[in-house]
Length: 68
Image (cartoon, rainbow, N blue to C red; front, side, top):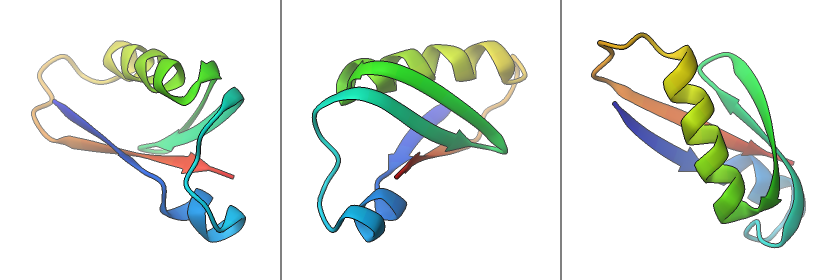
């Protein structure tokens, strides 16, 4: 399984790339996931959460949107 992150919605709302530390909200395949920390730390936590909820034999791409 490949996990990709899209900043499109965040950039459209804030007119800049996401960065910094705080609470981050992601929408991935119909699930809304929240993670704390830097954006890099939050992405790592979300990857772990996705691997727990995705079917074990899933071979496709999961796109996660960073929400504003």
